[in-house]
Length: 338
Image 1 (cartoon, rainbow, N blue to C red):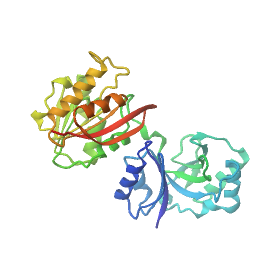
Image 2 (image 1 turned 90 degrees about the vertical axis):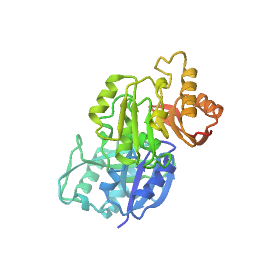
Image 3 (image 1 turned 90 degrees about the horizontal axis):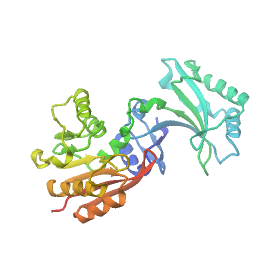
Image 4 (image 1 turned 60 degrees about the vertical axis):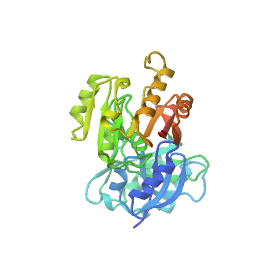
């Protein structure tokens, strides 16, 4: 059976997300693709969808209005009248009690509808499965009345939990962001990968779980971060270093690929200055990586980084502009030219 899903992803990564979905899902068919928003069909079940490491949130699409209506309340009345919600299949929820909640959103902002109308629609949804119970404080799943600009209203079942980012430390890259950067170029079992500024370890964590590699070099100048990663990451193909990145020798480890998130120069004290820091880093990659060695990094210093890549004869294969922690950043994937 084909299900229709909606998944959101990091802005400007919808093309790569669609490629990954086609790779990972059964009977995949792309229906619509917009910035950070993909609608598709697949025979894969909800467990497979919620396990995808590169999407933010995923929903089962239950119904779409034939045309944009005047309000979400108007749409709720249409659902009650036509009972479109009854067409959905709730096979995954037949065995266990599931706590549900009904929410209304316009452009991802909560929107209130008439309380009586809300209760009527909740009652209709509860009647779809004897295993559904209402819990507005701590639900297992959410039903959404949802509206995006210039599009018809949609009725969705949210599959991913709101605590999807639980455990992500302040300043740590989200897992899906690290996954995208690791996926920018086809890694192989022959790659020796280094993160010279590993921080909380977003890239090696993602690499270990999802990608092929020969060895991963984990380095950071802060000793406590390396000690924590040693306790957390158990793999014989990892090398932990506690060095200033300037003193590292990529050649000692036959490094083929650098994947990192270097300091941006916004909050850190980069000596003697941010321009010198980036030039030292990019020049080091240019002379120590082999021919066609890969450099993948994210930076707030977009123009500076690009000019330095050109200066040191890198071939820029990808330049993706996106948002990270609310700031405009660029992700570069470049190859070394000798």
